[in-house]
Amino acid sequence: MAEAKKQNFMYGAAILAAGVVVMKILGAIYKIPLQNILGDTGYGYFFAAYSIYNVLLTISTAGLPVALSRMISEANTLRRPQQARRTFRIALVTLLVLGAAMSLLMFLFPTDMAILMVHQPAVSQCVFALSPAVLLVCLTSAFRGYIQGHGNMTPTTVSQVLEVLVKVIVGLALAMWMTRRHMSLPLRSAGAIFGVSAGALAALAYILFRYLRSYRANAIAEAREGFDRPDPVGATLWQFVRVGAVITLGASVMSLISLIDTNLIERQLPHVPGIGPALANELYGCYSAMQTLYNLPASFVTPMTISVVPAIAAAAARRDAGEVGNITESGLRISAVVAMPMGVGLGVLSRPIVRVLYPMTNPVGPALLSALSVASIFVCIALVTNAILQASGAERLPVLSMIAGGAVKIGANLMLVGRPEINIMGAAIGTIACYAVICVMNCFFIYRRLEVKPNFARAFLRPLLSAAVMGAAAWAVYGLLSRLLRVDFAPSRLPMLLAMCAAIGAAVVVYLVMVIVTSSVTMEDMKLIPKGEKIAKILHIR
Image (cartoon, rainbow, N blue to C red):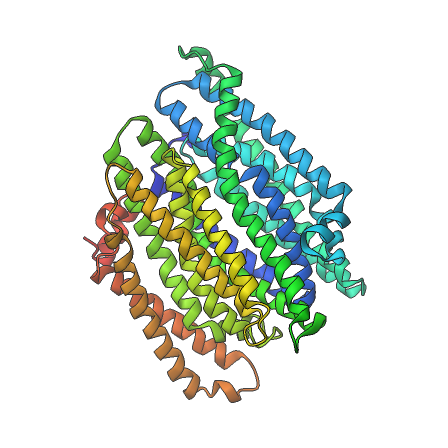
């Protein structure tokens, strides 16, 4: 089982992060031209349907694969191969039943769900096109969770890249073909979103192949040779469902809040004086496009959350409080090092980013992205702290923080979106407040829960200082070049693109220097990632 060898959590996170880079490039190839093909209104249909899909997918897969990864890691640490095999089989059946039920619901009642959940009947065709994806992703997540529980993140990465690649090819091809045939906008949006289902099928085919090739025979052999007696089926199922349900509940809160966010915007905006239904759809489509950019930092931090769960679960199973504390602080620090510069960069360069990528979107786009860039940092910290609490056996605590944050989000929407002078910006402000509350509560829970306390100041302040200096450099470089190139008077976007790229290049250099100067990343951190020691020597990290 050479290719299924165990990786330390940072090594696994690095492999997943490398996959994220590829997926984000492919995702940009997908979503940016898609928004330009469909327009703000068509992209709003796409995003609204995806919100419905995301709620059902979260119910099915948000918690159970995490619980599976945690339980497999614990069983392997305690040398219980028969228990690991029983856990996987129970998880696979459970996810199959859940996925089939959710897919059937979308397949049979797409119009009812579109009206009930997002108040848009036109979204029904998109919901129908997404219906196979839930079942396919559920099955894929079972195999991913099993393999991740063995500490191997490579198959997950490859399957995710393949999933996005197929989604891009199928989705864009259908959207362009339907546009040339002058089909209706809802139908074109449905064709674009069908790429998600096609990508899910490709990912399942690959991950199943890897499981059969590298894990199934070994698992059977280890279980036969193992001397452990597995827990009863009922007890294993109860533990799996109990842990998974609590994690799912927490994740479902945020998906539900996102859906309520969509619903409140759709209901409030058309009635705001001076806006009306047509402009409301356009503003929501613009908000949806900005959310695509704001989610970018979180996708680079998600690998840390996936990798940290089995690592902390294994250390907790050994009752090694020191190792749990070390992994926690390292995970927080590396996540901050990744998230903060991306959030600051999106905020400082929001105008050129939006104008280059989405030239046809509503003028409020840059202001929305600036606000959401602040929220993106809190989102990243919330994701990591949620994973730490879930892995350490405190999976109920993130539920409390997310309910509190969700309540703040709904309250902010109700108070702000309906005000003419704020309108759609109220949704972005509510997102900042929501995730700030979650972060503060989660950090408090971690401090109270863990025996060895992480140093939050060391984890967050140094990356924040580095990101602030980087942001100032990016702002100065872009401002200078935009004047020299006369960006505001140029007939094309090329001068703005050149100024933006130069500012990003300067920001990368300044941030690398600041990370070294402030010791935001240590040699011990670098030793945990592939080729880390060599990179550390080149960058003079001690």
